[in-house]
Amino acid sequence: MLKQDEIFEELRNRIVRLEYEPGKILNEVEIAEEFGVSRTPIRHAFQKLELHRLIQIVPRYGAQVPQIDFIRMKSLFELTTVLDPYAARLAVANATEEMIQELEEIVERLKKYDMSTEYKSAIVDDEKFHEIILEYSYNPWLQETLKNLHSHSERLWHYCNKFFETPEIFHETLEPIVEAIKNNDPDEAERTARIHIQQFVDRIKNTLL
Image 1 (tube, rainbow, N blue to C red):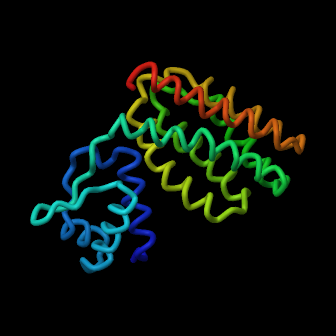
Image 2 (cartoon, rainbow, N blue to C red):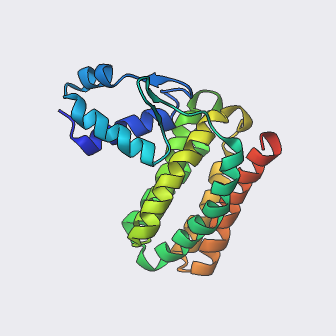
C-alpha cells in the first residue's frame, strides 16, 4: 500500500507527464479504490496538488486537471531562468564524483534518444538532471521552490513535444554544465545553466507565447 506522500508523487507525475490530460476530472473514490486506500489520503493528496496549482477543486464536482496557462508560464520562466542557474552555481561546491557520473550518464542517454518515440524519456531525464543539481545545491528553500516550479515547466515540455524534433537542445546545452562542475567553475556553471534554460524558453516563446 502506498504512503500518502507516495500517492501525491504518483498523481503529480501523472499530471505532469500528461497521463492525466488537461481538463480531466479526477474521481476521489475511483483513485482511492485504485490505490487500495481510504478516501482520506486521496483527499490530502488533492489538497496538496491544489496548493501546487496542479489541480482545481470544484465544489460538488470534483478535482480537475487545469489547462496549461501559457500567459502564467511567462512569470514562471522569469523565476527559473534565475533560480536554476543559481542552483548550478551552488552545486559546484558540493559536487562529488558519483554526482558528476550520474550527470554524464544522463547526457549520454540524451544523445541516443529517438525524439519521435522517446521524447517523454528525454524530458524525464532532463528533469532528473535538474533534480540532481538541485539536490547538491544543499539549499532546502531553493529545492522546495524549484521542485514546484519544475512541475509546471516539465508539464509544458511534455505538451510541446512536437517542437523538439532532435535531442541536441538537451545534450548540447547540458554537457557544458557538467564540464563546468567538473572544472569547479561556479561562474561557468551558472552561465551555461542559464543558456540551457533560455534556449528552452526561447523555443516555447517563439512557438506558443
